[in-house]
Length: 453
Image (cartoon, rainbow, N blue to C red):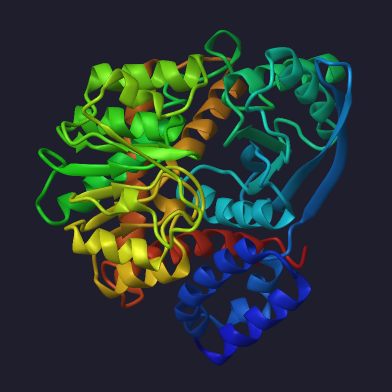
């Protein structure tokens, strides 16, 4: 770590105590950017990085609502408007008990770089609440979403800040929030993405993050003259991102053997085929059940419950070629990373946001495997959100094939940016440096053009 990076991080940690995920996200980026700042002293003189780590705006508010028993509940709501240098704030809303200011700042910071890489004019933001939709009735979720939007509506708009879904926020939640926004503002605009197809949504949006992660992996394999055909893949998670990651891997001839949720994971050596995937989609999207039910339906699979005492995740300890972490942040630690390498994995494409901790990232980079960080590999989701915004602005809908083709081309473009930028800054094959620097340059140059604001 250079003296500049160390002093920068010391100051950041002192100003933002008890926000370890935010510290981690910034440190990973700043390490890469030391290569840029040496070549471009004007960025340091104008304190571009110091300005980028400070959100332009943070909103925090209470969200009172009434459960089905008539009891008043109180949650906390957030919106981080991080950077609008290249377009309106854009980023998801997360409803999960783990949500706090530090986690949302890390996600908003990552979003700035990710959105920059998509080639679309979108700034970065993130928001959410510590509300847990799991186990709640539809009416309870509706009452919460309406209360949440009754405050948030003051701060967002189609040309200001356009939230989307994230963990715990799917089509149901987006629908309830959009309805409340429309009622309060008396206008029908593209203020949220991830909407229903009948009222402004885009085809391919639910699939986009998972598909994009696999498209990016295919581009990395192509640099070695390989494809996903016949590759064994480990996938974590079982939500939207994981489901469509599996679907696209199957499309391209690969085999997936794992899925997980917060209670444990399943290992199916025979592979999760389309029939099994359809079962998982019904289990998770309709019945909102737990992944352990998979082994009741398919008894040849093995279910392993989460053990909090364990120092590694056994999901990452199976023979495979490729890994697609698609659950949540810091699900791969140093021991997991070593287990992946020991089991033959030589490609990791992150569908989740920052699923690998700093120890794991170092191991991947030191061993020069094909490693795509989330801000590059999972940018497909926000890319199609941007395409949904474009369709809303035009009052027009593209076909499934048109959107999928645009997504595929955007992922190819992101891969090329990362690959070429890494080479230009003397670290060929390092997609972390390529993504961080490629995303930074576009935002930094826009900030330079717009003055000290």
